[in-house]
Length: 227
Image (cartoon, rainbow, N blue to C red):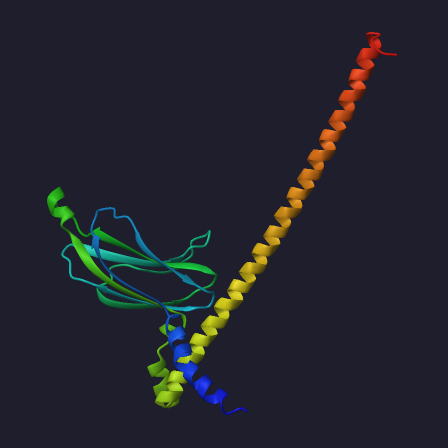
């Protein structure tokens, strides 16, 4: 009876691998970054779990009298700065490990460098092409280096990749479970407060009605309208 289930499970393996391939935390973007004397930040945000490896690869195109600075920050209330680097050129590869749940932002500024005097039209033409790749979690791990270091075969390397992806899925499910529990507690607490406020309103209205009845009764007695 166990033999029919084996082909079925093998047929599901490609679907499982395809599902895991969509779970990669990868972001790639290419854009022009205008240059200013006092440039605003342009930030690219990606969600990340605690203790996740983040690899940022920035390819900066050529640009005269321009300086590109990069910062990697998080979305926490304190806006922690993981890394800050001035004047990145060509290809720069940066790595950090996140500390808390939230979003990780890669922020760039393009400064007009030096004391060169430019007209408004010339300044508006200054920009540099930024090609940004952000790998988070299992996708940021260099499995080729691990395979060379541990002498792993191709199949073992792929299994190690799948292991990392499965761990990411499990971590995501645990995060969603904790989030659901937190929302359930918030829901229950809010419902309890609404009920308490409703009972308080009913008791207050009943007390106010009773006070009005006694007050009117005493008033009518003073006016000899009732006995």
